[in-house]
Image (cartoon, rainbow, N blue to C red; front, side):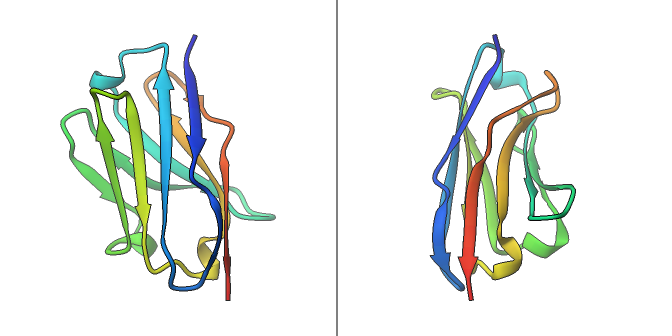
Length: 113
C-alpha cells in the first residue's frame, strides 16, 4: 500500500523559511519521479516542483531560486526547502507520486505578511 506522509508545515512570517518532508512507503521510491504540488485557498492544485529518480529538478517560475527539492533514496524521503516565503506561497502542500497516482494528505503552510 502506497503511503505518502508530509510534515514540516506551519506558520511563518514573510521572508521566512520552512522545510517540508515526505515519508514514502509501499513502492520503489528510488526509481520514482516525485513532485510537490500545492493548493491555495479557493484555487486549484498547482504543480510546484519535481525531481527525477536521477536527481534532475524542475520548478514553477514563481518559486525558482527560492525553493529547493531534494530526495534521500536511502530514507525513502522527499524534501522541499522553502526560503524567502511570501503570502502568495500560502497553501496546503502535497507530496505527489506521478508513477503510482498517489498523493499525501498535505501539510499546511501559512505565510503572514
